[in-house]
Image (cartoon, rainbow, N blue to C red; front, side, top):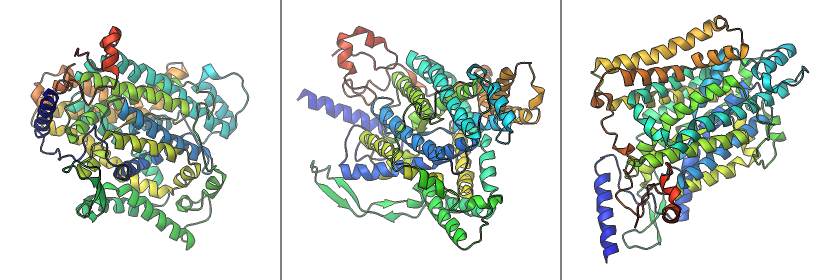
Length: 588
């Protein structure tokens, strides 16, 4: 009887907390409940499709920066490895990390330093064999063992392994250290909405060379792709398609599946990337068959054809299992390492904001300090795993699945775990990766125009909590963004002006100053915490979620953020009571 009363009180308090936010929908299944398998499978597939766009974009970009040939099998391997890592991280994060139904995906922050290396001339594909050997010597003197020439294929693998080693070391020194020691729970109080806005906006703005490069191959297809995605998001978002869904009859407390024919899905709003890719891929296929696109590889428009990477699909195996060292022994590059350090810090800021958004969408309390520490620690550990497997990037949390949670009213953690398992299965199908890696370049260009534009908009949306009438806030915001932009452009124009006499140090300085995200984010942190201003004006007046015990006080026995079994172990193993990424010990 007492247990029933306690459970009823918990439900009432949880309901009161959820109703504080009008955007929280009534949930059919909360975080800890398990929907029927068929419903879970459908919802999991929707989340998986949301992540494919960025997986493809980043893997293609890494392959291009490493100077891989168009039919190089490493392109399919990079994509499959990326999908596998995303799935693995989603499973671990949802089950043991932050323990919210949150999708892990490729972080765009890790593309910024790579682009800086490209624009600063540190990595260049147009090099002679002699320059190639010198480049390898300069960028990694500690690993250079002889003066023998290396082929371009070896250079590709050499650069990918440099990404691997640098990603692993930077992940250990940032997210693993900050999350494991609990320092992040304290340092996060320095990050306000202005810093979140500046960092994410700078990431989006610094990505403009990518759509420029891909769109330049065949502008008509790129423009049509951008318009298609724009129409789906802006003009067709109100159109919903009636679908049949299956759910349990919760009112009758039975597991019998019932059909709901009234459910409507805003298909165009949820799957704009998928629709655009399918439509424009078909258009490129038609243009290829009709002979509109040239068959001369020297022509830029040749990359818009659908048959340019046929050998890649043929040579790729049906099944591909990512394993540590598949591209060679991990190597270390100081410039890449420093760039990834800034990427991890930007990813931290992005993830913490996502944790808050997901907790609100699922009707749970804001994540406490121990949950935030564990979530970032998990991202760091999985970043090290991603480096070992050769993904070339780490992962971060995605807020895209908030849309699906609101539409389906299902916030189950088990659905997200299933989505991660499905991603892992897709990652081991080599032919699938080869097909996705053969996407025509202008199609990618059209998608990235809108995708990166939305990334900038997401950053700007963080400003809704601050006082935009404050001159202080406007000055911090504008100065931070502009200093990052100006510094980055100066490095591009005056790269040779940085000459300390040590080539390795020159590369590090160029990469730091050439990474707009890092310069702008660091500037905003310094200004926002040194220029006098009230917490309310700064949008930081609601910081209760960072208190050690908050988020776990509602239900002492079934907290959303508590790791299973740990509470029992804390009774006998006292040292576990003081681990900063585990829930506080509560004696029964």
